[in-house]
Image (cartoon, rainbow, N blue to C red; front, side):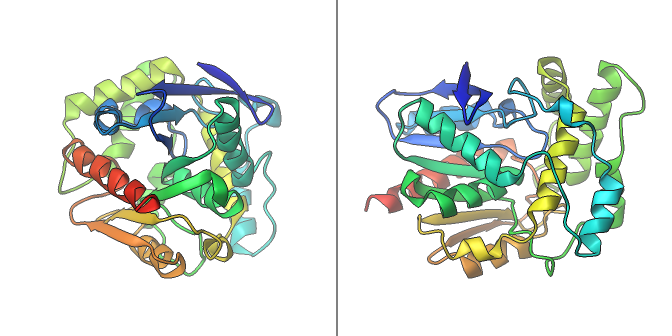
Length: 295
């Protein structure tokens, strides 16, 4: 369903009991709400939660920003490397306000927030700037953006910055499958047919690489969020794969060092994805962390 939030049209999926405690799931760079597996949603609903998934601005069925043009990412990267300001059409704090606007539009006073990758960066802003709205916080495979943290290997960076081999659905699906093969979990390899089916569903629902580029620019422009972390008061659980090639586990460790009382769940064999075999584990972790908000 479409919701007017923070002055934008935001696509939201709402499942579970209307009166249940709310879990708000915020997905990562270029990923649509359907990237949160339905099995995870079902696991949370079975535990009594009302689950909200949203398409972040500029992706999926939410309002786009094509009028802002396609960013020159090489130039933005160079400016970041030289410690020069990077300008973007919107910032991660704006995206946090989108999420807050969704809660406002639905009359929800407080939610258990879970963010993955870029969604975890957005969730950091949300928990730091609107602490009264975040009952608990689960940060999955994400980072503060501190410059001292290790970066992905150059070969993986090149894969991330590559483009599909050509126009059309087949090329887009092949590119997505290749990308997730590069960042996925070595200990929990994805079924090739399932991965292709999910990539195809994503492309057919909405394929918008220019929006992904603008979201990436917002990440670069956001810089180091470490100063925000001391302001996070919600019970926090940090979930990270020990084999994450995109956001190395040092990022999760650094978050735990700077968020008071944070609990960690560092998982051997997990990369930068949500393996089917771990979805029950993730649902249990989110529920256990939510229980810390109301001991």
